[in-house]
Each structure stands twice: as structure tokens, then as C-alpha cells.
Length: 226
Length: 364
Ligand SMILES: Nc1ncnc2c1ncn2[C@@H]1O[C@H](COP(=O)(O)OP(=O)(O)O)[C@@H](O)[C@H]1O
Ligand SMILES: [Mg+2]
Image (cartoon, rainbow over all chains, first blue to last red; front, side, top):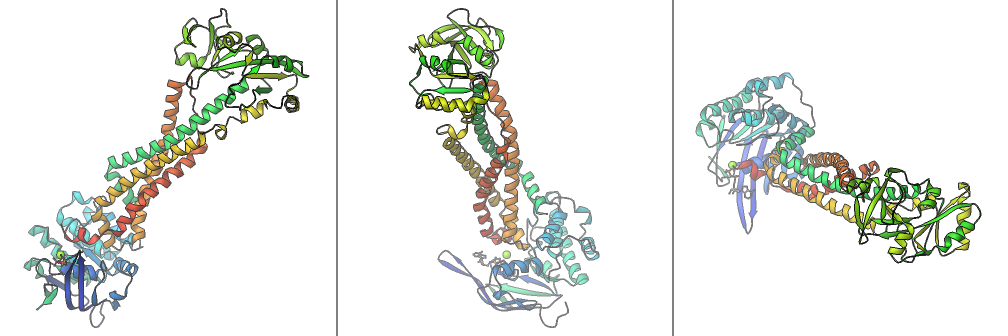
């Protein structure tokens, strides 16, 4: 984790989507450096390209132009299979809502992430600490519909980091939660960052939530504004 | 882990799961019932032929074991066969179709008894008046006949004089001369049975008869019963194939629809799996396993159902139809069902791989 320089380097990143006859410029020349161990908040209006940035970082979609490297590996040079592989171990996603597989228990939702990565679910000291920190140890045998939104989101966080990803990408993780549950989730993220050194990028609309980060980045019309 | 997800998914939509399994089960039952019916009928015909007790079986020129030629043989041939060496009895019968696949057979009871030991009567006994008819046990049971019951056949009322144990020659028996006269076939026979003093001479005698009567269809009983096979019934094999094809198409469509809706319904779940790093192979393997479970469960249920359809056939149509349980077809039907189901899940699987997961994940 203590590499000198940046964990994430983004240079002149652009992404355009073709929607019928129209080309939508979701990102237009983004430059961003994120250090290992950083907790970064990204804010900005709807449609400013925040999610698109995450999807590129997570390898869910390829960039159109520019370079993105995570841990020294350039995403632009990767194949589809390479990017799928990267998702198994390099990045963990947490989305706004309905993050969990509804038919599986919390424990199995976490286990399947390990299984996809080709590893057994081991309850080592590190993972026990994570579960304690998240406060979900007692809820593992419940299915999502028996859990509150905040609990579901914390299980999703546990699942996102169970493979020790270099970065955790949280796209409006508190967007659907009440204040109490939001605070619980935000505290968990801060705890993961401070106690385990997890690098976190979080998109949010809420200024109070953004304040949990070490640094706040503003996005507008596909660009970062300072 | 995948298996757990597959089972949970199947449990999550019990009605969908049940209907898919049921449809595949019906597919399997349809095939097994048809095969069991064909085999059962042929086997039954073969057993009744054996029950006659003849060593050599003679049919008119141009006929086969399964079908009669329209031109019957002359009764005079009985004299010819009676005079041949090693022949102890030669007798003939005439068969008259009475609609459907049923026939009534005219028999010379005295000579037939010397051939086969005669019918074994469960109730009543041989003919007493010219209007008497003999029926076998199964025909009696299905048509609720007892000794003394009336039966209309060939535009005439008959009195049931005896009920005999099934499995010998025929289901409905009239006196030979009476049936010949009624159908305008006096002096004619549709088949001739010959019993030898030593069954080991059968092949030798068949060869000798064929030399003397080259146009006639002459079989040893072994040969004759071996002809009762699916291959020798004209059109039966194509018919079975058509039914199999229709069954497979039905199974294919049901699984296609079932998996297709499952994929549409699970857009978000598939997106979650992709975001966790699941590649195309992982996604496909989930869907294929689910399909496999449906097809396997459907096959087992279909095999169980085939016992039910056999019971129904015997219970309600036992006089004309018989069906067998055909375990040698179980693997085949299972492979057919699984194959059709896997084909049905290919497009949904491709759709799942192609589906854009991002929209489902990023927006409400
Ligand atoms: N898969 C897509 N296809 C077409 N257009 C897209 C797609 N994803 C995002 N966009 C467009 O790109 C722009 C940026 O979207 P997004 O990154 O979701 O913004 P944000 O997360 O900041 O609300 C929007 O105009 C959006 O409509
Ligand atoms: Mg967004």
C-alpha cells in the first residue's frame, strides 16, 4: 500500500456513448490522481459523468480516449477478459440500491464474491474484524429482504472488500438511506479507511457525506472543476 | 456455491420451476408412453401368437406377419399340410376386422384344442348355439361382459358363451364355419397353423414347405414372433420420430420462455455478478445448471408419469391396447429432454452475457 506516487492515475480520460444518432460525451478530459489509502469524495450534479468514471475504473466499460492505470496497470490496453479478471481482485463496487442477490443470505452474498474470484471463504482475523466493524456479524444468515437498507448496504460493503481490492468504489452508497443508516454506513467506510488503510472513492450528492472524505472532487459536464 | 444460487433461484419462483418441470415431464411421458404402447402392442401380439402352440405359421401370398393380404387361402391347403410327414395337426382360422384395430377370429375349436391345448375358460365354455361368441378376459372386463351377455358384432347379436384366459390367438372368437359364411368367405382361411411331431424339425419343414409353396408366407414360430418389432410396422418409426420431435420442440420452447423471462427478471442480479468479476462462462454456467436441474427433475417426473399413463391405458382401454414400461428408453428420453432444454437456454444465456449491466446498477 505504501507505493510512492499514485494508486490511480487518470490522464485526459474521455468517454462517449452513441445513443442512436447522437453521441453523448459523458467524460471530456478528466485528470485525477488518487494516492493509496486515500478516501476521496466525488460530488457533482446528475449526468456529470461520475458513475461513468467509476464504471471505467472498475472495467465495466472501456474508455474512449486517454489513459487510466490502477496499481501501474493500464486499463486501456486490457482485453474484455482482462478487465473481468481485474474486477475480481482490484476493485470492489458498492451501488446505490439493490446491491445484493435477493435469493442468497448475507453470508452467501459475501461468499459468492470469493467464489467468483476463485478463492474459498475463509474467516480469518482480518475478515472477522471487518464484520465487527460493519456490525453485521449477527445478521449473516438473513436474506436481504429481512434486513434494513443500512444493513444491506453494509453487507454489500463487506462483499466489495472481501477479495482485498486495491480500491473500493462506492456510487451514492447512502442515496437511499435515512440519516441514521447513512451515518452508520459512512462511519463504516471511514473505519475501513482508517483502520485497514482501504482506498475509497465515493460518489455522493450529500455535502455532509462528502465531508467524510479527505478530499472532495467536483465534477461538472464530464470534467473535474476546482 | 453456484449450485446454492441455482437452487435458491429455483425456489424463488416455485410456480415457474414447477411449470417448467411439468412441461418437461409431459415431454418425457409422451415419448415413453408412445414407445411403451408400440412395444406393448407388438409384444402382446407376439405372445398371443406363441400361445397358439403351432410350430409353423402360414399366411397367404403377399402378406406379412403384421398385415393380412386381402386374398385368403383355400381350405384345401389343410389337406395338403395334413398329409406332409411329421405334421400332427393342421388347422386354419379366418380373421375379420371389426373396426379400429380389433378383429374377430373364426376358429375350429376341436382342431385348435389339439394344437394349443384349447382355451382355458374362466367362465362358461365352448359354443353351444350358432349365435355364441367367446371373448377373452380383458375384453370382457373392459366391456363389462359376463356369460350370457349380449354383444353386437357384424350387424348381429351374439351371446357370450364363454370367457377365456387372455394371451392365446385372439380376443373375440366365433366358430370358423359361421364367420366364413357370414363374411362370404366359405372355404377360405387367412392363416394356417401346423404342429409337428418334433419341434426340432421346424426349420427343416419350413424349408420343405417353402419349396412346395413358394408364393406363401411361411414362418417358423420363432421367425414369426421376431417380426413383431417396431421396425416391421409400416410408418410406426416415422410416427414415433414425429412425436419425439414435437415433444422436443415443446420442451425447448418452455425452457426457452422460462429462462428468457428469468434472464429479463434478473438483469440486476446478472449485473451484480458481472460487477463482482463474473465472466461469460460463470453467468452461462449458472443458467445451464438451472436448466439442467429443470430437465433432470422433469425427466424423473416424466418417467414416474409413464407408469401412470400405462395404468390408465390398461384400466380404460385394456381390451384393445397394452403398454409396457421401457427402462431402456429412460436414458434416451433423459438425454432428449436435457438436450432440448439446453438448446432452449442458449439464446437466453447469450442475452444474459450481452445485457448491459450498467444501467440496471446505476439507476433506480
Ligand atoms: N450506458 C450509457 N449509454 C448511453 N449514455 C450513457 C450511459 N451511461 C451514461 N450515459 C450518459 O452519460 C452521461 C453521464 O452519466 P453518468 O456517468 O451516469 O452521470 P452521473 O453519475 O454523474 O449522474 C449522462 O448524460 C448519461 O445519460
Ligand atoms: Mg450516477
